[in-house]
Length: 213
Length: 213
DNA sequence: GCAAAAGTGTTACTAGTACACCCATGC
DNA sequence: GCATGGGTGTACTAGTAACACTTTTGC
View 1 (spheres, rainbow over the protein chains, first blue to last red):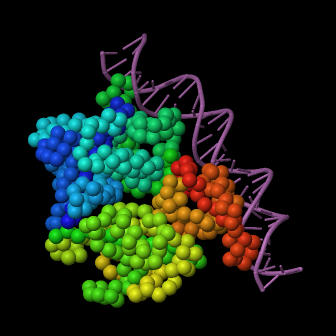
View 2 (view 1 turned 30 degrees about the vertical axis):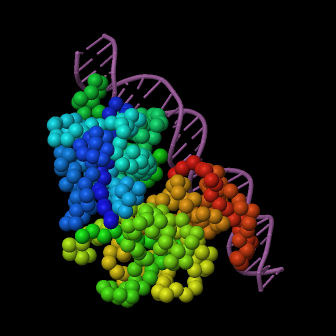
View 3 (view 1 turned 135 degrees about the vertical axis):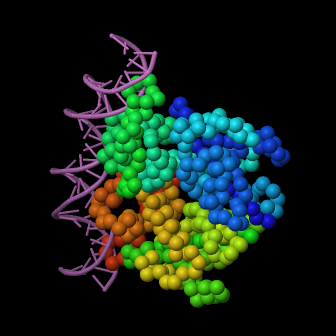
């Protein structure tokens, strides 16, 4: 037998820490373990549509997700070939904050450095997706999907510094993104800060794909 | 119902043209059309293993293949959700030459600029995989998988010039690859040429991932 | 010895890095 | 008015791009 599972891996960055959204498994096997949100691939909908439905169940509606790859969990059940189709999304802290409300299942954001015991091969999956993310932010190509709108350059910089584990000069970081003509100002400012409010940006409709790091 | 198909997309470059391997479909639907080699995902083997089997059937044994992504062909048959798992490989002209022998099915290398009528969504798949390839050769990360050994720098350069549709200075191209310490000489030379034989190289076991283009 | 393709080094320019001061806001 | 974080310009350094001649082979 064969089974196709859609696995959703949502990332965010809070206080310089990369975090993933996990939910608590309520049934055996692996009862009480944490896992990535998942759903069986529907026969009546495309993979993308099924994953959108899953996002809605988690109360995220405006998150862009990106299909990464598949992973075969051939070991899980003898005679069963389980194929995980991986979707990755990236949320800013505002969207995470809006999602604090109660759900029927336990959910929590875990730092990728302090992951709990996870069900199935989900630990492996998270690591694969982190690599995917790390690689993707090195080029401009799909950054607009990960960062839909309303981010400040210091915020964006923290994402880079955290994920790539490097330190970047603020002025040079600005220069890079503005020089390559990737961004436009929204005209808004982020006032929820101690110091001077930061300008908010969004990616342009069309920009050239360049290598950033 | 749900069905998982492994689709194999082999590329090569001959005379500055990017080519893909297609086989002729012998049964309805799309009888007589060309298609990518494919196989149903086995219940008794991982996706990777199934794809290796398919390679053997095509008489390619030493080709590295790389999993790209999935594509959902939800429209193909009403009530059927067909999930294509895409594998991509890259062959040098020597391996292509070795594969000229007869097979029970018709196979042919088509230039990506002159593709024939193709079955299902395979045209779309080929284009997605070309983009994948194009993106991958811009970084060092998995170049060693695409170019396992025994290539000359002029050959490699032609791949870049063709796929990226640019012209590169020979000296600067060499400098880039040698400076980043990606390659080592095999000590062999390619004698099958008109002019001076070219040194053959291979990628080192370990090299740093850098942005090349 | 001539045609064909490969190998090599130097200079000019462009892009990236390092660095310090001023600015807007909250308390 | 001071603490906090954001925004800006310039000089220097390193990496990329442009360029011509020599070398090795086959015929």
